[in-house]
Amino acid sequence: ALAILHRMQMDYTVALARFEESLTIYREQRDQKGVAQILGNLGTIQDDQGNSAAAATFYEESLSLYRQLNNKGGIALMLSYLGGAAQAQGDLARARELLEEGLMLHRELGVQYRIAWDLLVLGNIISLQGDLVQAETLGEESMLHARELGDRDQIAWTYNFQGRLALRWGDNLRAQALFQESLSLFREIDDKLGEATTLQDLGETAFQQGELVFARSQLEESLSLLKKRQYNPGIARTLCKLGSVAYAQNDTAAGRMLFTECLPLFTELNNKAGMLEALNALAFAMRSHDLSFAVSLWGAIQTLRDRLGIFLIPREKTPHEEQLNQVRSTLGEDAYTIAWNTGRAQTWEQTADYALEKLGETAR
Image 1 (cartoon, rainbow, N blue to C red):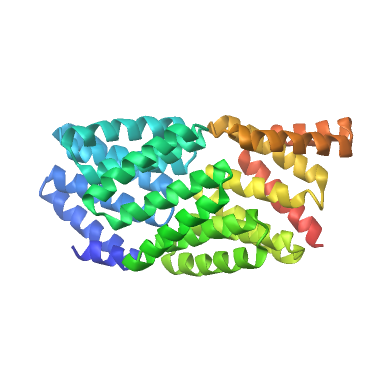
Image 2 (tube, rainbow, N blue to C red):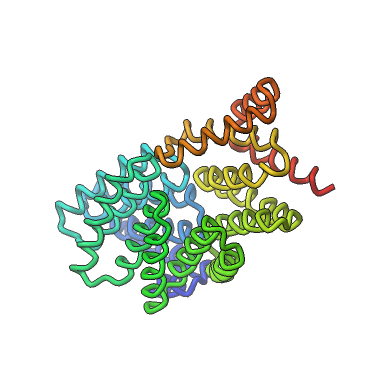
């Protein structure tokens, strides 16, 4: 109980120590269910800080024990947690498989709040795989469960998810309205992570609409909350978006600094999906500064997309291909091919290092 309290207060060092004390006691008592529960809690502390690989190690050990005990509730929960961790690491196929198995068990057990959450996470994975229609269906079902439960936190996260889908469809006004609904609820229930995430999404919406000053204010507020929350994936994502805004405002020094700060964070977290987003934002920013560099980044991004199974929907793919054709015409076929193949041949870690090196060169 003390460990859970400290975790809620984001005092992770003390929470970790208390959970480890509990784990020692349960192991001494040979209480396998207690051990499994604490291992799951240790995983959530790692997840809270964005350390998905470390979290997955604890979840796997917990899952193994729950399977030995034939504890379906524990099995379902760890499958869901492992699915979330796999998504963060960019293994969407495995994430989907784990979430679908966890959801099936939660349906069988009738655990409605877990069904609602599984549907939302599964919907996010499927949206990354390019099927926004199915993702919307899952989001709608998640909202039905959340409303039946009167779970305002789940309702807020579902509004956020639906806003992100609307943004990908290009319906910025609907996205903005959904994000505002989400933000109001998160503030009412004092969910700082939800508030920070939604401010970030409002910033992205404003950026896409060319409202750069408002975008920057929303992102800076988000970053402040995320730093207090010590949530590194969110910090990295917001730094990246602030970098895009800075470049759009012709503040290249700030843009370089922000991307130089966010890229190593994604590498450290092994967050491939986040790195993909950051590299794409950097390539977009580099169009006006270094076309060859931008093309190399787009080549590397395509390699990473293929590897992760993250696909553009037609609305996104058509303008992207038009942009590449325009750049090919400007650079010339030979220069374009060399730059593209350079990126295609790189691992995502090599691309991050290459990007940091190029950003360093432009600073000198």
